Amino acid sequence: MAVVINPGGPTDRESIKLATRKRRFIRNLAHIEALPETMRARIEVNTKAHPSIEPISGSAVYNCYGMVFAARRTWILHPEDVSAILEDDGYHPLPWDPAAWQVGDIVLYNDRDGGLTHVGMIARKSISISDAQIKVDVLSTWGETGEYLHPIDVVSPFLGKPSAVVSQRFLP
Amino acid sequence: MIPQTLFTEIEGPRLAAQLGVVSTLDRFTTAMMQHPAVAMIVNAVTSQDDVRQIVARVERLLQVHADPRYCHPQDLAIAVYLRILDVCAPDAAAELAARAREIRNLWWARLIAHRIGASPNRSIPTVTVTRLMPVTGMPVRAIRTVSSTRPAAPRDIVLLSADGMMAADNANADEELTELIRVGARIQNYTNAVAP
Image (cartoon, rainbow over all chains, first blue to last red; front, side):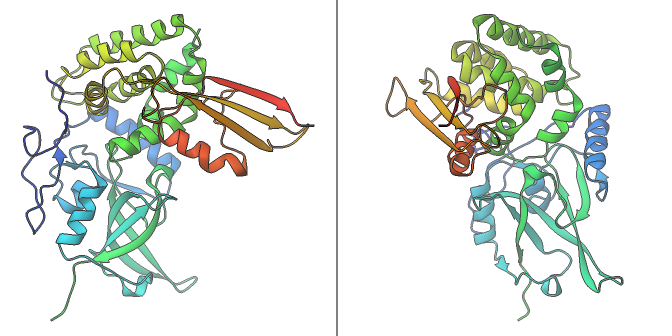
C-alpha cells in the first residue's frame, strides 16, 4: 500500500465529504469500531479514574470533533480544521459565565500552550442547592475510548482544561 | 534487556485507555512520550539487542489474527513501538511501518506508519543533558546540547534520565524539556552531577 501523504484528505478513500459552510474541506478518517471487550476495558479504566463520569456510548467511529461537528460519523484529524469550522460556521465566544451558556453550546479544551485538545457539548445545567452554584455537564467523546457525560472540568489530563465556550445561537 | 513488565504495561488495557482518549496524531505522540511506561521503555533501549526485542514484539503483534470487523486490539501498542523504533532504529521502524500500513484495522499504528513513510531517512539529532543536582532536594539546573548530522533536521530529540523518569521537574528546564517531550524526544546521554 502506498504511503498516504495527507491521510483524511479529499482524495483519501477512507474520508467522507465533510466541509464547512464556506466549502472548506475538513480532513477526516473513518475509524473502525473497537472490539466490545476492548471498549469495555477502556470504559472501566476511565470510570475508575474519574468516578464522576458516566459512559454514554462505546463507539470508536468518531472522536470528540467528529461527535460535535460531524454528527458522529467520522474522526476529524486536525485542530486547525476545527478552527476553520468555528470560523466558517458562525460560532462566537460566550462569556466565561455558566449563566450565559445553554445546552448545545460547545466547550473548547486547551493545553497549557493554548492549543486545542478537546471539545464537548453542554448537555445539562443544574443548580447545586448546597452551594448555589450552576453545575454544567458536558457530553464528549474521549478519543477511541467512548462517549461520556461528565462535569465540565472532569476529563482525562491528556484532554486539557476547559478554556472557552462558543455557540452558533443568535436571535434576529 | 527490556523487562517483560514494561511490554505487559504497553500492551495492557490501562495504557490503551489512558492514551486512547486523544483525538489527533500530534496529541497522541505527545501523550505517548509523556507516559511513564513509554519513557521507561525508551530508557531501557540501550543496545541492538533491545531494539531486536521490540522489533520481535511488533512482528508478533502484526501477525496476531485480529477480527477485521474491529480495530486491532493491539493497535495502540504497535503504534507506541513504531514510534520508539522511529527514534531509536529508524530503518527497522520504516520496514515495520510498511507492513503496518497494509493492515487496514490499525488506526494509530497506521497513522504513525504513514508519517514514518512520508519522512524517510531523516536524521536523528541527539541531546546530551547534564543536570546539576543539589545534595538533597530537586535538581537545580539542567543544561542541554544538541547535535545533529543535518542542521535542518527536525527537532526529534532523545530524552531520558538515568532513573527512567522524565527530566522535566526543574523549574528552569521545565518548558524546554516539555517541548522536547512534545516532539517525541530521546536523550542520548544523561548525567547527574552533584552541585558545588
